[in-house]
Length: 485
Picture 1 (tube, rainbow, N blue to C red):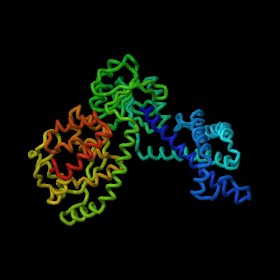
Picture 2 (picture 1 turned 90 degrees about the horizontal axis):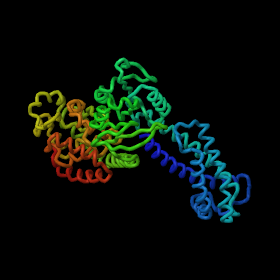
Picture 3 (picture 1 turned 60 degrees about the horizontal axis):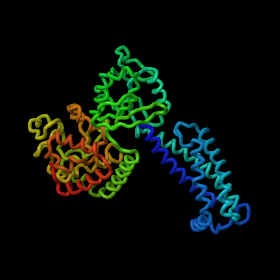
């Protein structure tokens, strides 16, 4: 859980540091060039002009210097622990790490100068470059921390935890989580098997129920992970709770014996010294999820730009052909039960939702989903929009906001989720999408149970390649309107 996130973030910080060090090298050239002109110092070797062409000429003759300078800084920073728990370090600790690492780099920098006989290399340039590197790295760390704090403050990249246990070890664990709040961890509540503990507060968090209440709690609260920090004697008590979480696709972490799990994959990790075994029902590495999000953002932005004339035209036609708003907004359930507002072009007459009860007996879909072929609530234009899936274009804004992805299980209504069987709730363990296996396999021609099985298949077999194949198939499905109504 946390170790993988931190490793992913740490690798990115190393890359960003490398970019900053190269920028300091470039800035050092221009700054020292102007210092020499301002104060009448001697000309700098290989510095022909204060422009990009001059900088590139200078860099070519100092390639050995930058080839040593960059890795020296990264190694020195790593040796000082600058990449370990950097999110929890104070400004003074960060400054000391960078300055000491800079000192080690300065001492080691004489090696390439001596080996490659760089007698023409300006000592002023080296000094300016070194100072700028220290300043740039310090500023970069502060800006990075501010950016990550801002992202977490907006509610993005947060992990909602349900902690099972209130004993000494559990309290220590809660304190560690609280001290690492800027990692995006948020404790929703606690579980204790003592009935008298219900409603009490431990370390500032309320006890929400007993172990047997966990299925009820994860239905009523947005829970991303359940962590068991309990005595070994509770082993037989938590068996059903772990299996219940597995059935619903909620990851669990525990430091006890393994269970007979049929879906979740087990891996060992730790959280600041707490050994944990994690049972994941959705196996994806952080870099894969990052790539998936980047693709979502880039593709959604590109499509909104390219399709904006069409969307504007559709908005005008909808407004002119029927009374009511252009957009249809509806609350849907997203990742682990998070609710969000889904956007569509309105394809029905006004107050159509109120007429649904009258049409319930005509429902042609089994399960909690409502669908009929010749729905009288749909406008003539709406039938065309639905046939070509044009009514779903505004959901590109949901993708940009992060509520949805391009590929994933379709987002259900809260009332539908209430009627799900236990195993069907696992489809909420993944961010919903614009398209999915069900979407490209016939949609309304497929029964509800088979639809749910397809979503489970997608979750269990997920990969970036599978997403790509589904997106390619979606293009053909939309072109021919297969399964749409």
